[in-house]
Image (cartoon, rainbow, N blue to C red):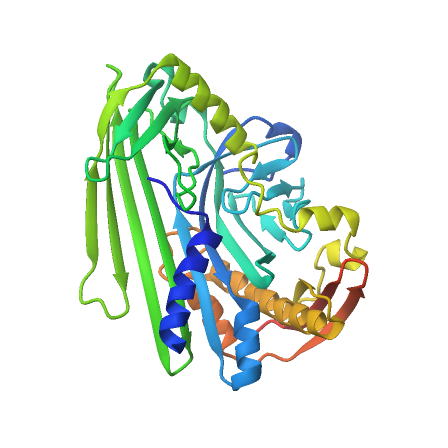
Length: 402
Protein backbone atom coordinates (compact mmCIF):
# COMPACT_ATOMS: atom_id res chain seq x y z
CA UNK A 1 0.00 0.00 0.00
CA UNK A 2 2.82 2.38 0.81
CA UNK A 3 5.56 3.82 -1.24
CA UNK A 4 8.85 5.52 -0.66
CA UNK A 5 9.35 9.10 -1.75
CA UNK A 6 10.60 9.14 -5.32
CA UNK A 7 13.99 10.65 -4.49
CA UNK A 8 14.65 7.88 -1.92
CA UNK A 9 13.72 5.08 -4.33
CA UNK A 10 15.45 6.59 -7.32
CA UNK A 11 18.60 7.27 -5.36
CA UNK A 12 18.82 3.79 -3.89
CA UNK A 13 18.03 1.93 -7.10
CA UNK A 14 20.17 4.09 -9.33
CA UNK A 15 23.17 3.79 -7.04
CA UNK A 16 22.80 0.02 -7.38
CA UNK A 17 22.37 0.23 -11.15
CA UNK A 18 25.28 2.59 -11.71
CA UNK A 19 27.53 0.57 -9.42
CA UNK A 20 26.66 -2.56 -11.38
CA UNK A 21 27.18 -0.84 -14.71
CA UNK A 22 30.41 0.90 -13.97
CA UNK A 23 31.74 -1.37 -11.61
CA UNK A 24 -14.46 17.37 -17.11
CA UNK A 25 -13.28 20.20 -14.87
CA UNK A 26 -13.20 23.90 -15.70
CA UNK A 27 -10.21 26.16 -15.38
CA UNK A 28 -9.17 26.69 -11.80
CA UNK A 29 -10.43 29.75 -9.93
CA UNK A 30 -8.38 29.48 -6.75
CA UNK A 31 -11.04 30.84 -4.43
CA UNK A 32 -13.46 28.01 -5.23
CA UNK A 33 -10.99 25.22 -4.50
CA UNK A 34 -10.09 25.70 -0.84
CA UNK A 35 -10.92 22.66 1.27
CA UNK A 36 -11.99 20.49 -1.66
CA UNK A 37 -10.55 17.06 -2.41
CA UNK A 38 -9.22 16.25 -5.87
CA UNK A 39 -7.92 13.02 -7.37
CA UNK A 40 -4.36 13.35 -8.61
CA UNK A 41 -3.48 10.61 -11.11
CA UNK A 42 -0.01 11.23 -12.47
CA UNK A 43 3.21 10.10 -14.08
CA UNK A 44 6.47 11.57 -12.81
CA UNK A 45 9.78 11.47 -14.66
CA UNK A 46 12.92 12.31 -12.70
CA UNK A 47 16.00 12.71 -14.93
CA UNK A 48 19.50 12.78 -13.46
CA UNK A 49 20.65 15.69 -15.61
CA UNK A 50 23.85 16.62 -13.83
CA UNK A 51 25.25 13.08 -13.61
CA UNK A 52 24.50 12.38 -17.27
CA UNK A 53 25.87 15.71 -18.47
CA UNK A 54 29.14 15.35 -16.58
CA UNK A 55 29.60 11.81 -17.83
CA UNK A 56 29.03 12.89 -21.42
CA UNK A 57 31.53 15.73 -21.04
CA UNK A 58 34.19 13.42 -19.64
CA UNK A 59 33.59 10.25 -21.68
CA UNK A 60 32.08 11.69 -24.85
CA UNK A 61 29.13 9.28 -24.73
CA UNK A 62 25.49 10.04 -23.99
CA UNK A 63 24.31 8.42 -20.79
CA UNK A 64 20.82 8.37 -19.32
CA UNK A 65 19.54 7.80 -15.82
CA UNK A 66 15.93 8.32 -14.89
CA UNK A 67 13.16 7.25 -12.60
CA UNK A 68 9.47 7.01 -13.48
CA UNK A 69 6.61 6.81 -11.03
CA UNK A 70 2.96 6.33 -11.95
CA UNK A 71 0.18 6.42 -9.35
CA UNK A 72 -3.61 6.42 -9.41
CA UNK A 73 -6.46 7.28 -7.01
CA UNK A 74 -4.20 9.57 -4.96
CA UNK A 75 -6.04 12.44 -3.25
CA UNK A 76 -4.85 16.02 -2.72
CA UNK A 77 -6.64 18.82 -0.90
CA UNK A 78 -6.97 22.28 -2.36
CA UNK A 79 -5.82 25.06 -0.09
CA UNK A 80 -6.22 28.80 -0.56
CA UNK A 81 -3.61 28.95 -3.28
CA UNK A 82 -3.27 25.41 -4.58
CA UNK A 83 -2.37 21.96 -3.30
CA UNK A 84 0.61 20.06 -1.96
CA UNK A 85 1.85 17.43 -4.40
CA UNK A 86 2.74 14.10 -2.75
CA UNK A 87 6.35 13.46 -3.82
CA UNK A 88 8.32 16.57 -2.93
CA UNK A 89 5.86 18.47 -0.79
CA UNK A 90 5.80 21.46 -3.14
CA UNK A 91 2.78 23.70 -2.85
CA UNK A 92 1.61 23.92 -6.46
CA UNK A 93 -0.31 27.13 -7.05
CA UNK A 94 -2.80 27.33 -9.93
CA UNK A 95 -3.75 30.76 -11.26
CA UNK A 96 -7.18 31.53 -12.76
CA UNK A 97 -5.56 31.19 -16.20
CA UNK A 98 -4.27 27.71 -15.31
CA UNK A 99 -0.60 28.60 -14.79
CA UNK A 100 1.12 26.28 -12.31
CA UNK A 101 3.96 27.63 -10.15
CA UNK A 102 5.40 27.02 -6.68
CA UNK A 103 6.70 29.31 -3.97
CA UNK A 104 8.73 26.33 -2.71
CA UNK A 105 10.69 25.96 -5.95
CA UNK A 106 11.04 28.94 -8.29
CA UNK A 107 11.86 26.66 -11.23
CA UNK A 108 8.44 24.97 -11.20
CA UNK A 109 6.21 25.95 -14.10
CA UNK A 110 3.30 24.20 -15.76
CA UNK A 111 -0.22 24.36 -17.11
CA UNK A 112 -3.63 23.15 -15.96
CA UNK A 113 -6.20 22.68 -18.74
CA UNK A 114 -9.99 22.88 -18.79
CA UNK A 115 -10.34 19.10 -19.11
CA UNK A 116 -8.38 18.50 -15.89
CA UNK A 117 -5.16 17.45 -17.58
CA UNK A 118 -1.98 19.14 -16.44
CA UNK A 119 1.78 19.11 -16.56
CA UNK A 120 4.46 20.78 -14.51
CA UNK A 121 8.23 20.69 -14.60
CA UNK A 122 11.25 22.14 -12.85
CA UNK A 123 14.63 21.31 -11.36
CA UNK A 124 15.49 20.06 -7.90
CA UNK A 125 18.66 19.22 -6.03
CA UNK A 126 19.23 16.32 -3.68
CA UNK A 127 22.64 15.90 -2.12
CA UNK A 128 23.87 18.75 -4.29
CA UNK A 129 23.05 16.86 -7.51
CA UNK A 130 20.83 18.60 -10.07
CA UNK A 131 17.86 16.72 -11.53
CA UNK A 132 14.98 17.63 -13.85
CA UNK A 133 11.36 16.90 -12.96
CA UNK A 134 8.53 16.41 -15.44
CA UNK A 135 5.02 15.47 -14.26
CA UNK A 136 1.82 14.98 -16.23
CA UNK A 137 -1.59 13.70 -15.24
CA UNK A 138 -5.17 14.52 -14.45
CA UNK A 139 -6.52 16.59 -11.55
CA UNK A 140 -10.28 16.21 -11.08
CA UNK A 141 -12.74 17.04 -8.31
CA UNK A 142 -13.54 14.19 -5.94
CA UNK A 143 -17.12 14.88 -4.94
CA UNK A 144 -18.47 13.61 -1.63
CA UNK A 145 -21.08 11.49 -3.44
CA UNK A 146 -18.29 9.80 -5.39
CA UNK A 147 -16.60 8.59 -2.21
CA UNK A 148 -17.68 6.36 0.68
CA UNK A 149 -19.95 8.07 3.20
CA UNK A 150 -19.53 8.29 6.98
CA UNK A 151 -21.01 4.81 7.55
CA UNK A 152 -17.65 3.40 6.47
CA UNK A 153 -15.58 5.59 8.79
CA UNK A 154 -13.33 3.91 11.32
CA UNK A 155 -9.80 2.96 12.29
CA UNK A 156 -8.14 -0.40 11.81
CA UNK A 157 -4.89 -2.25 12.42
CA UNK A 158 -3.55 -4.35 9.52
CA UNK A 159 -0.87 -6.93 10.21
CA UNK A 160 1.41 -8.46 7.58
CA UNK A 161 1.42 -12.15 8.60
CA UNK A 162 4.84 -12.65 7.02
CA UNK A 163 6.75 -9.86 8.74
CA UNK A 164 4.47 -9.09 11.67
CA UNK A 165 4.58 -5.36 10.90
CA UNK A 166 1.44 -3.41 11.66
CA UNK A 167 -0.19 -0.62 9.68
CA UNK A 168 -2.57 1.77 11.39
CA UNK A 169 -5.39 2.65 9.01
CA UNK A 170 -8.00 5.40 8.91
CA UNK A 171 -11.11 5.50 6.73
CA UNK A 172 -12.69 8.95 6.91
CA UNK A 173 -14.43 11.34 4.50
CA UNK A 174 -14.21 8.67 1.82
CA UNK A 175 -10.41 8.58 2.12
CA UNK A 176 -8.04 5.79 3.09
CA UNK A 177 -4.93 6.79 5.05
CA UNK A 178 -2.34 4.69 6.86
CA UNK A 179 1.09 4.60 8.45
CA UNK A 180 3.29 2.00 10.11
CA UNK A 181 2.77 1.51 13.83
CA UNK A 182 6.55 1.29 14.24
CA UNK A 183 8.04 3.42 11.45
CA UNK A 184 11.53 2.89 10.05
CA UNK A 185 13.79 5.38 8.33
CA UNK A 186 13.39 3.88 4.84
CA UNK A 187 9.64 3.23 5.03
CA UNK A 188 7.24 4.14 2.31
CA UNK A 189 5.48 7.44 2.81
CA UNK A 190 1.68 7.27 3.02
CA UNK A 191 -0.70 9.52 1.13
CA UNK A 192 -4.52 9.44 1.20
CA UNK A 193 -6.39 7.35 -1.38
CA UNK A 194 -10.00 7.29 -2.57
CA UNK A 195 -12.54 4.89 -1.03
CA UNK A 196 -15.33 4.25 -3.53
CA UNK A 197 -19.01 4.69 -2.55
CA UNK A 198 -19.36 0.91 -2.09
CA UNK A 199 -16.37 0.83 0.30
CA UNK A 200 -13.90 -0.62 -2.20
CA UNK A 201 -10.26 0.47 -2.44
CA UNK A 202 -8.13 0.21 -5.56
CA UNK A 203 -4.61 1.54 -5.92
CA UNK A 204 -1.89 1.05 -8.51
CA UNK A 205 1.70 2.23 -8.20
CA UNK A 206 4.49 1.57 -10.69
CA UNK A 207 8.15 2.57 -10.39
CA UNK A 208 10.71 2.18 -13.18
CA UNK A 209 14.41 2.94 -12.84
CA UNK A 210 16.64 3.02 -15.93
CA UNK A 211 20.32 3.53 -16.56
CA UNK A 212 22.37 3.06 -19.69
CA UNK A 213 24.15 4.48 -22.71
CA UNK A 214 22.47 4.93 -26.07
CA UNK A 215 23.18 2.04 -28.41
CA UNK A 216 25.35 0.20 -25.87
CA UNK A 217 23.33 -1.09 -22.95
CA UNK A 218 20.18 -0.52 -20.96
CA UNK A 219 19.40 -1.65 -17.44
CA UNK A 220 15.80 -1.36 -16.33
CA UNK A 221 14.18 -2.30 -13.02
CA UNK A 222 10.46 -2.00 -12.38
CA UNK A 223 8.18 -2.62 -9.44
CA UNK A 224 4.38 -2.59 -9.56
CA UNK A 225 2.11 -2.59 -6.54
CA UNK A 226 -1.56 -3.49 -6.85
CA UNK A 227 -3.59 -2.93 -3.71
CA UNK A 228 -7.26 -3.74 -3.32
CA UNK A 229 -9.53 -3.73 -0.32
CA UNK A 230 -13.08 -3.61 0.94
CA UNK A 231 -14.50 -1.72 3.88
CA UNK A 232 -17.78 -3.23 5.09
CA UNK A 233 -20.72 -1.55 6.76
CA UNK A 234 -20.34 -3.92 9.72
CA UNK A 235 -17.05 -2.20 10.59
CA UNK A 236 -14.70 -4.79 9.12
CA UNK A 237 -12.06 -4.39 6.43
CA UNK A 238 -10.05 -6.67 4.13
CA UNK A 239 -6.92 -5.57 2.25
CA UNK A 240 -4.48 -7.42 0.01
CA UNK A 241 -1.45 -6.29 -1.94
CA UNK A 242 0.48 -7.80 -4.85
CA UNK A 243 3.99 -6.58 -5.73
CA UNK A 244 5.58 -7.54 -9.06
CA UNK A 245 9.27 -6.89 -9.68
CA UNK A 246 11.11 -7.25 -12.98
CA UNK A 247 14.58 -6.21 -14.02
CA UNK A 248 17.33 -6.66 -16.55
CA UNK A 249 18.74 -10.17 -16.24
CA UNK A 250 15.65 -11.59 -14.54
CA UNK A 251 14.05 -14.44 -16.46
CA UNK A 252 10.57 -13.79 -15.06
CA UNK A 253 8.86 -11.31 -12.76
CA UNK A 254 9.04 -11.92 -9.04
CA UNK A 255 5.67 -11.70 -7.33
CA UNK A 256 4.77 -11.33 -3.67
CA UNK A 257 1.25 -11.24 -2.24
CA UNK A 258 0.17 -10.12 1.19
CA UNK A 259 -3.28 -10.72 2.69
CA UNK A 260 -3.38 -8.48 5.73
CA UNK A 261 -4.95 -9.59 8.99
CA UNK A 262 -7.31 -6.83 10.11
CA UNK A 263 -8.64 -5.79 13.51
CA UNK A 264 -10.66 -2.75 14.56
CA UNK A 265 -8.90 0.26 16.02
CA UNK A 266 -9.87 2.58 18.85
CA UNK A 267 -11.58 5.96 18.78
CA UNK A 268 -8.32 7.45 20.04
CA UNK A 269 -6.44 5.95 17.08
CA UNK A 270 -9.06 7.32 14.70
CA UNK A 271 -8.64 10.83 16.06
CA UNK A 272 -4.84 10.57 15.96
CA UNK A 273 -4.80 9.39 12.35
CA UNK A 274 -7.32 12.05 11.35
CA UNK A 275 -4.97 14.75 12.60
CA UNK A 276 -2.03 13.15 10.84
CA UNK A 277 -3.92 12.89 7.54
CA UNK A 278 -4.76 16.58 7.77
CA UNK A 279 -1.10 17.45 8.31
CA UNK A 280 -0.08 15.25 5.38
CA UNK A 281 -2.55 16.86 2.97
CA UNK A 282 -1.32 20.28 4.10
CA UNK A 283 2.30 19.28 3.47
CA UNK A 284 3.27 19.25 7.14
CA UNK A 285 5.04 15.89 6.91
CA UNK A 286 7.13 17.00 3.93
CA UNK A 287 10.04 19.14 5.02
CA UNK A 288 13.26 17.95 3.43
CA UNK A 289 11.98 18.20 -0.13
CA UNK A 290 11.53 21.96 0.01
CA UNK A 291 15.27 22.28 -0.38
CA UNK A 292 15.14 25.50 -2.39
CA UNK A 293 12.40 27.35 -0.54
CA UNK A 294 14.53 29.07 2.10
CA UNK A 295 17.14 30.21 -0.36
CA UNK A 296 14.44 31.48 -2.72
CA UNK A 297 12.91 33.67 -0.03
CA UNK A 298 16.27 35.14 0.98
CA UNK A 299 17.60 35.44 -2.57
CA UNK A 300 14.74 35.54 -5.07
CA UNK A 301 15.53 34.66 -8.69
CA UNK A 302 15.63 37.32 -11.41
CA UNK A 303 12.29 38.50 -12.74
CA UNK A 304 12.81 36.88 -16.14
CA UNK A 305 13.31 33.52 -14.45
CA UNK A 306 10.05 33.74 -12.50
CA UNK A 307 7.99 35.06 -15.41
CA UNK A 308 5.89 33.02 -17.83
CA UNK A 309 7.79 31.34 -20.64
CA UNK A 310 6.29 33.39 -23.45
CA UNK A 311 7.81 32.31 -26.75
CA UNK A 312 7.07 32.70 -30.42
CA UNK A 313 5.18 29.92 -32.23
CA UNK A 314 7.46 26.99 -32.97
CA UNK A 315 9.89 27.93 -30.19
CA UNK A 316 10.33 26.08 -26.87
CA UNK A 317 11.94 27.63 -23.81
CA UNK A 318 13.60 26.09 -20.79
CA UNK A 319 15.02 27.37 -17.52
CA UNK A 320 17.66 25.90 -15.26
CA UNK A 321 19.15 26.82 -11.91
CA UNK A 322 22.13 25.39 -10.07
CA UNK A 323 23.82 26.22 -6.77
CA UNK A 324 27.59 25.93 -6.87
CA UNK A 325 30.42 28.05 -5.51
CA UNK A 326 32.22 27.88 -8.85
CA UNK A 327 30.49 30.36 -11.15
CA UNK A 328 31.47 28.62 -14.38
CA UNK A 329 30.35 25.21 -13.15
CA UNK A 330 27.04 26.59 -11.89
CA UNK A 331 26.27 28.32 -15.19
CA UNK A 332 27.27 25.28 -17.23
CA UNK A 333 25.03 22.91 -15.26
CA UNK A 334 22.15 25.39 -15.15
CA UNK A 335 22.38 25.62 -18.93
CA UNK A 336 22.27 21.81 -19.21
CA UNK A 337 19.16 21.77 -17.04
CA UNK A 338 17.56 24.52 -19.14
CA UNK A 339 18.19 22.55 -22.34
CA UNK A 340 16.68 19.45 -20.73
CA UNK A 341 13.60 21.46 -19.74
CA UNK A 342 13.16 22.85 -23.25
CA UNK A 343 13.29 19.29 -24.59
CA UNK A 344 10.70 18.30 -21.97
CA UNK A 345 8.48 21.18 -23.09
CA UNK A 346 8.60 19.89 -26.65
CA UNK A 347 7.97 16.36 -25.42
CA UNK A 348 4.91 17.28 -23.38
CA UNK A 349 3.45 19.03 -26.43
CA UNK A 350 4.08 15.92 -28.53
CA UNK A 351 2.46 13.73 -25.85
CA UNK A 352 -0.59 15.95 -25.50
CA UNK A 353 -1.14 16.21 -29.24
CA UNK A 354 -0.96 12.43 -29.58
CA UNK A 355 -2.81 11.05 -26.54
CA UNK A 356 -3.20 13.69 -23.83
CA UNK A 357 -1.67 13.64 -20.35
CA UNK A 358 -3.51 10.66 -18.90
CA UNK A 359 -1.34 8.10 -17.16
CA UNK A 360 -2.62 5.09 -19.14
CA UNK A 361 -0.42 5.96 -22.08
CA UNK A 362 1.02 3.53 -24.59
CA UNK A 363 4.24 5.54 -24.48
CA UNK A 364 5.94 6.46 -21.23
CA UNK A 365 7.17 9.96 -20.68
CA UNK A 366 10.78 8.80 -20.83
CA UNK A 367 10.11 7.25 -24.25
CA UNK A 368 8.71 10.51 -25.61
CA UNK A 369 11.53 12.57 -24.08
CA UNK A 370 14.13 10.10 -25.37
CA UNK A 371 12.74 10.34 -28.91
CA UNK A 372 12.81 14.15 -28.85
CA UNK A 373 16.25 14.28 -27.21
CA UNK A 374 17.75 11.94 -29.83
CA UNK A 375 17.26 14.61 -32.49
CA UNK A 376 19.71 17.42 -33.03
CA UNK A 377 18.57 20.60 -31.26
CA UNK A 378 20.22 23.96 -31.73
CA UNK A 379 19.48 26.41 -28.96
CA UNK A 380 20.50 29.83 -27.80
CA UNK A 381 20.96 31.23 -24.31
CA UNK A 382 18.42 34.03 -23.86
CA UNK A 383 19.30 35.06 -20.30
CA UNK A 384 21.85 34.04 -17.69
CA UNK A 385 22.82 35.30 -14.26
CA UNK A 386 25.05 34.16 -11.43
CA UNK A 387 23.98 35.37 -7.99
CA UNK A 388 27.21 35.37 -5.98
CA UNK A 389 25.39 35.90 -2.68
CA UNK A 390 23.45 32.64 -2.97
CA UNK A 391 25.99 30.93 -5.32
CA UNK A 392 23.14 30.22 -7.72
CA UNK A 393 23.16 30.35 -11.50
CA UNK A 394 20.02 31.01 -13.54
CA UNK A 395 19.84 30.29 -17.27
CA UNK A 396 17.09 30.48 -19.87
CA UNK A 397 17.38 28.96 -23.35
CA UNK A 398 15.21 28.79 -26.45
CA UNK A 399 15.20 26.14 -29.19
CA UNK A 400 13.16 25.36 -32.26
CA UNK A 401 10.18 23.13 -31.48
CA UNK A 402 9.91 20.59 -34.27
